[in-house]
Length: 87
Image (cartoon, rainbow, N blue to C red):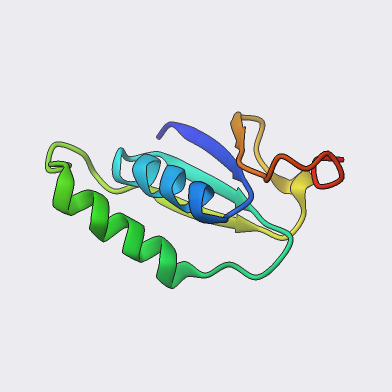
């Protein structure tokens, strides 16, 4: 299974994660605060209404408490454009 990491689970992070999840990726998610999985599931349903993912098997999502625990994979950060957040 292909792997990807997403740093920050805001609106854009949820949308990116939902897309890769539906494409069959194993997703590692790191967020400083608690995650809203309900909003993630809403993004999945929204994408499924717009795009046919029937040729793909759903992926897997792993939630990490520490950024150091993310696997050594392609990583997308979707933080706000605030340098203090990115340090």
